[in-house]
Image 1 (tube, protein in one colour):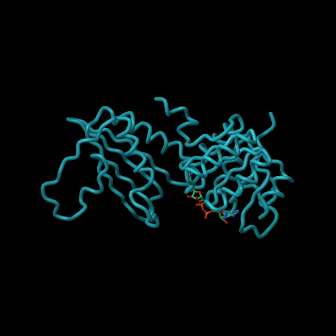
Image 2: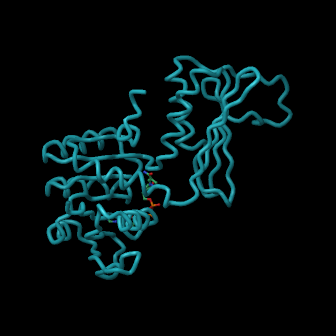
Image 3: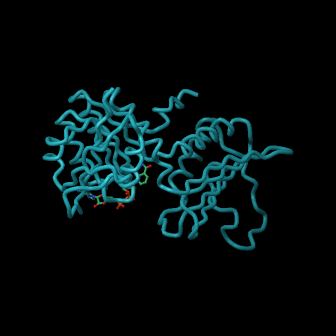
Amino acid sequence: MEPIRVLVHGALGKMGQAVINAVSRDPDLVVVGAVDVKANRDQLQLPNGSGEFPLSTELESLIESTKPDVIVDFTQHDAAMPAVRIGTKHHINFVIGTTGLSETDLAEIDSLSRQNDVGAVVAPNFSLGAILMMHLSKIAGKYFDYAEIIEMHHEQKLDSPSGTAVATAKGMVETRGKSFIYPETQKESIKGARGAEYEGIALHSVRSPGYMAHQEVILGSTGQTLKIRHDQISREGFGPGITMAIKEVVKSKGLIFGLDKLLGLEKE
Ligand SMILES: NC(=O)c1ccc[n+]([C@@H]2O[C@H](COP(=O)([O-])OP(=O)(O)OC[C@H]3O[C@@H](n4cnc5c(N)ncnc54)[C@H](O)[C@@H]3O)[C@@H](O)[C@H]2O)c1
């Protein structure tokens, strides 16, 4: 079978580079082109030095010359949606990791991909381990009455708690169908010692150099604790989720939102 032809949009960015590395290592996939608004040369080297592929600032002309099956987009919101409008018109499937897309954007992606008979995967998190950590926490939360989440990120992260921590807490409460028990503090000698609280789950955010993205969910019941922990130590960790999405999107029609859907986890 011919390898799936991939065009990387946002190719010079941190995630774009990780996509090029992951796709180049997979024998079922091939990078055929790269687009970035910052492109200042017309070729990029494959990571193993075995060849080159075209780089451009012009998405539509590169689509016409390289004929990709899938565009992988890790750019920014105002770049992703115009790319989807151009790409779907040329009947190209999309894998999108860019964050900040609205419900309206998602509806448009679904509608454009259906109209043009292609698939689109949009996932706010392409880390298989993080998705599984959230899923396992939902299962375990049904059997434990106490839960705390500690998330650790690099010091440049602006928001707290992380989106993953909030999604984990919401998913656990929703699956369990009721709040967790939150032990009230009688005396808080330093304000905030118990962290933030969501439906009985205490959430703690650590910000420090030396971390990338880590999360530990601690579940407690009488006489035992269960800890579910995920550590993302490099962007390479997104590779398996992205290559899996590329292979699945060419078989689908319309929008698939979230890696959990691709993994078939949502029904469990
Ligand atoms: N879904 C996930 O798992 C996941 C993981 C990490 C990052 N992200 C998201 O991916 C996106 C990119 O993250 P990053 O860390 O690689 O950022 P980055 O700034 O390193 O890279 C973005 C790249 O997009 C390019 N770009 C911007 N506008 C463009 C345009 N109009 N046309 C073509 N290229 C354009 C930039 O020049 C840059 O090279 C962000 O939205 C981030 O939140 C998602």
